[in-house]
Length: 218
Image (cartoon, rainbow, N blue to C red; front, side, top):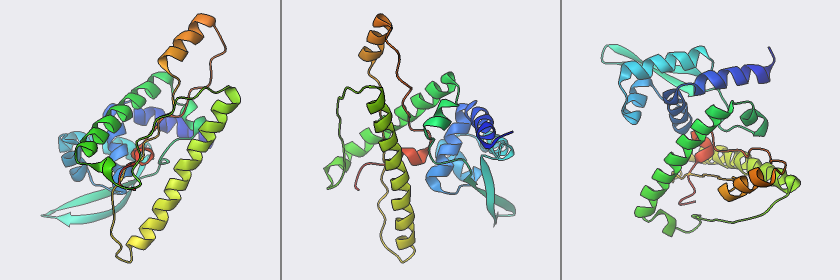
């Protein structure tokens, strides 16, 4: 089986249960986490989390990184093996129903966290962003913009890596979230169904916690 096919199979099984996707998101966000930490973070019973962590490990979506003794027990820590975000080809390989479920989860989380941060004045800070543009694109423009947004995510990862290196020297840190939404409007979709014009390719939506890194506070 080819690597793309293996990725698709792992993704489909990982996304088949909404809690597994939440666990995977949380591990990506934290870089490393144990079932106990995930249980507290997600407010889900430890036994339930541990079961889905085992499934994710069997699917090679996560791997064990270290263990630590805790009061007579051993706590296991895991990191994600799947990409922090999916490119267009990978996203297209996920079944439509699963795509919609993941998109809905991510959208609700972004709105909830952005609203909470906004109440605390997050968007008052220099270099914070809350931007909106309405644009009309042909097929080539649609694909060009998608490629640009993927490049933004890749460069954000590079910035994160450089920041991690500086933090090792004791630099202060600001936790932020970057959320990218690019979608065809409901009115446009309705119009396409009426006129039966050739539909455009589904846009990439955020798929993991790293693709929803915060856009507040730089």
